[in-house]
Image (cartoon, rainbow, N blue to C red; front, side, top):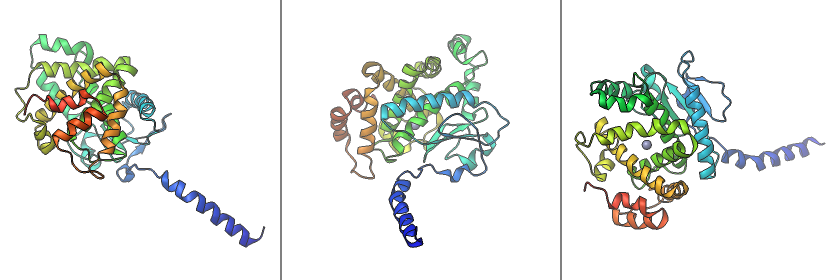
Length: 306
Ligand SMILES: [Zn+2]
């Protein structure tokens, strides 16, 4: 073969494949992987740790892999992502926001604690001062010494993974509460239909918290949530909102099953503020009812605090 012909062939070959390679380029922000150790796992997604002598990740990774299989099926995709486990003292170097150990997701990364999370420690301290009758509701699920990482890390890692399934296509939802409701509905459906051991771990702590009422929440409207979101609400107030979303998510999945999840994900993506105008509450209620389901529209229409 003449050199020139070979050059043309190579050019054609590269020409054909470049767009394809570019289309498949990863969306994962690996700039925050620098300095982390990659774990050898049997899974398709990347797992990294800030310290490989701490061995407490295998159960969590297995659970995340099961959730990936479920979410890939219902959302008809094959999502690429990385899971990072970070020690508390290195948290601020790698994570998007404090406190150490608080599960979070963005740019293709799920970030989880490698040590006991600061949130779990604080809540456990508070809870252990409660009378035995309250503690006895938690002990069968979270252990005699009450380990709330079984909720904050194990359970919430699935909520965070679910966020990546809409973040990949858009990160500016019409409302933050709607994206939170979506991630919690997805977490609920996974734990309910795909993981027997997960359900009690997911459900017991929120039900316990919901029973304790809303005395500790200073802000309660959905507008408050939009305006203040994570950083401008106290941790207790933010958790109060998340628990209200949990209550709604539970009731929506219990009465609709999981088919509604793909509709809500499509809605989040199609109405992302990067491509569409902001809808008023009245417009949002009409569109949600038509395109997703009445139960989701009702979360906004029937929110108790106006
Ligand atoms: Zn969330």
